Structures are given as C-alpha cells and as structure tokens.
Image (cartoon, rainbow, N blue to C red; front, side, top):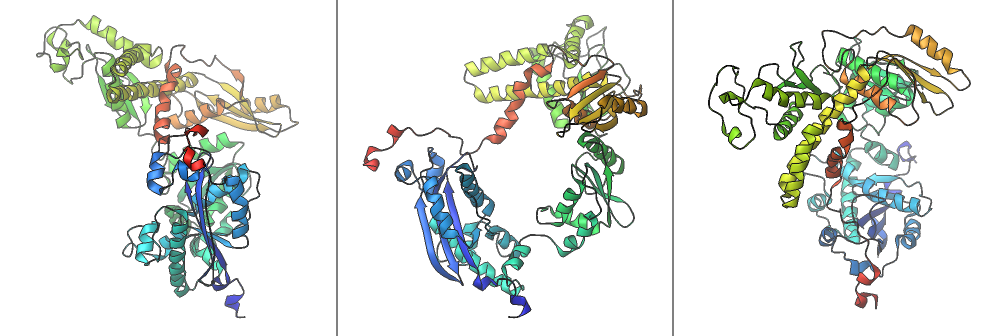
Length: 583
C-alpha cells in the first residue's frame, strides 16, 4: 500500500444514506413517521431499509400535504421503539450520510435516548455541507436536495418520502465524491477534514491556546502590533479559545480574525460576573473590529418629557440637566417611538412640536383634538395646571406606578377583543408590552443604582461562595471564598480594597456610575437562585405597582418566535382513527 492508502479509502467505505419524515421540526417534541435508508459500498447499492412509523401523535394537515403521509397510513405501523433496533442493526459498521444531517441524526439520537438505547458512535457525513464546499453559486442557486438532484441528473427525484429522498441523496453523494477525488480527497479522514470548514491557517494557530489557564476570565485576541481584534469571555479560557481552531467554529469572520491574530492574552477573573463586566468595559474602551455587540454603549436612546408649559414627548440621544423627565435607556429609536405611540394612546398629550404660549392661542387645534387624542392646549382651551396633571401622571408612571399608563390600554384591548377585532387588539397588546418593557428596565436599573454599597454572595457549586461588592450599580470588587474558607474575612478584605465609586452629578438619570449593560449583568447575577444579600447600605426595593407586575405582556415575543407550521400538538384519540384501516 502507498502512504496515501494508509487511511480507509472511500472506495472501501460503506455508507448508509438515511432520510426521515417527521411530524415537525423539533426532536423530542415531534415524532418520526417514516425511515428510509440505502446502504452502498464501492458505488453499488447493497441494501435498502424502509418502514412507516407510528409517531404516537397526530399528523398535522400541513405535514400530510407536504409528505403525503396521513394518520390512516401510520395507524397500523410499528412504533419507533420497535423500528430503531432494526435500523441500528442495518446501519451498523457504516458511515451515516444525510442531507442536513443534524436534523435526521438529531431525531434518531433523541429517539434512542428516550428509549434507553445506546447510540452507536457513527461517523456522519452531511451532503449539504459537502455541496456548499464543492459547488459554486454559478452552478447551483442553493444546496437543497431537490436542486442538487436536478443538477446531478439523479435517477430518483426527492418527493418528501424517506426512501425516495435517500435514493436521491445516494446519487448526490456519488457525484460529490467524484468531484472530491479531483481535489485529492481519497480517504474518510480526509473527507471529514474537508467538511470541517477549518482552514489550514486556523489549525496552525492552535498553539495560541496552549499556555492559557483553565479558569474563568476574559481572552483578548491581538494582532502583531498588539491591537485587540476580538474580546470574549468564558468559564474555561483554554477550552473556549481552542474552539476557534476546530470545526465547531463556523463563523467566517472569526476565521478571518484568527488568521490575523498573533497572540491571545488571558485575564483571569474571580468568577463569571467579573469576567462579563471586564469584557464589557474592554469592548467599550478598545472597540475591537471583530466584536459586534456592546461596542458603542454610549449610543443610548431616551424618551424625553420636555420641561415647558405644555410638555411633549421627544426621542433624544442624550440626557441633559434641563429639568426634564427621561425614560430609558432604550435599545433603539424604533423602540422609543413605539413607547411614545403607546403613551399617546393612553394619555392625551400633545404631539405637535410647536412652542406654545401660556397667554394666548398659537393656532387652531389639529384633527387629533377632534378625535379625543389630544387635549388641544394650542388653542388655549386648557390651563397649564390642568395639562401638567397629565404630564405628572406620565412622570410618576416612569418612576413608580405604571397603572395609569397600562390600564387605559388594557381596557381598549378588552373592547377590541370583545368586538373580535383581533388585529387591532394585537397592536394594542404590543404597545402595552413596549411600555412595560421600557418602564420595567428603568425601574429595575434605578432600584440598584441608588444603593451606595451592596455585598452579595452566590454559591459556586463546590461548597464555596462567589462574592461581589456593588456600588451605585457598578461592580467595585469581586472575590471567592473557597470551600472551607470563612467568607467574612474575604468580605472585609474586598470592602477594604474595593474601587471608590462616586456618582457622576453631571450624568442625571438612572445610571450615575455605570453603563446600562454592566448594571444589567450585575442584576442578572443578583437574581440567580441561591444569591444572598450580605450587606446593603439601604434596602433594595422596587415600586409596589411598577412595571414588574405586568411582565406577562413581555412573553408575547417568545410566543411569536415559537410559532411554526407544526403548532398542532393534539394527540389522536384511538376512536378517531378509521375503523376500516384498523380492520
């Protein structure tokens, strides 16, 4: 044998090409309805495996139309617990191949785990990844199985049935392997390395992680001139940095960054909270070119209630010492505009930008006054004192009782729902969520930033304590009392050496000493189960009727993201299945 043939050559490798049809897209929640597999060796088909599977749950109309598999077809089929051992025996000793392999292999692996079966250590090849590595955009517009089967003139066209799709994948696999042979890929290890999507330049940089510690902390990739390229954090610095040089790192920008990096500087931290805070501060200070998040924390957006005889709402990018009230920081101008529109729905503040006079009317009222959306101070029909009561209601809602803003919107939501105007009701619901989200964030931050000094402890999972000293929402010191070490001497040492933090009198608002992201990191750490307050200079409190009591409205985004075509989870009743099919 030649040196090139020491590894198992592809012509000697047995592949089992598998395809599944399922009731949905989530392993563990959805079931398998059909398994199809084709075993090939040396370019020849040596066996096929196909069976319908009873998923144990109903098949939605969407899936039935897509695959042609109905409840009547699977009502007498074996369960996955019966089919799995047969399939594993069929595929034993081969390499699993699938198109978009994480989907099919994920379902099979989860099915084995739920039924106590051991998942064999299959080598897996994904034809979708192979196609992306071999083919260009000029050849195919995408790498879907149907597109590839047409491009390579497969003898079987995929029709969303397991065995047909597996046969089409066999033809695609053989066509891709023939191209890989021209690229020097002759063995299974070379094939797996080719699909790893890791460049040689990345692999050669693996030595950068050799001397890094295994502790929690921050890592800084630097170029030859010492300029920070990328800053990240991890509980295990060495393990995390090593991932940048292996197949698990698939971001193209990170591959480019690793190619430029010459060294990695570690910064060990006492615990993960300190690491997160240091990462935010370093990113804000250096603004590395390959970091996207948290590079410009100073670019905040605020909603301002102006300080004038007839105040109005305005979206601004900075807080000033002008006596006005501010709500924020908000994440974007779009969010600020959504909150402003919601407040206008609840309170009839003026929406014009005119400078109004207390002594005389400026102009005639606009159409908003005619429909009750504005109190029309522009035409002199309302005194500054009466109007200021509306503005004071908004100021109080931002810092305390949010009910005057939310209750009118909730009443309007109930009226729209009763009238079955659900699209309009959804708009009002989203506006309630915008107000609650903005007020809850500011009230939550302000509750911590007014505390001069706070000491908290969190279990480290090994019998010790992670300790933090927080001043005005800013992390001033951190340490660890390991198992067997009395924590009080460590706390006293942290208090004695903590940073001196003074609130910036020139920075009004809820952030006198730290940026919003740092304070929110501290809050998430404090709100973890098991965290204890050790010392505090004043009570840590939130408004009794603040926005935190309306957090149920914030779940709408999660529900919307979770929506998919496979939403019907109703289990079929036995009597609902056709009697003729069971007979």
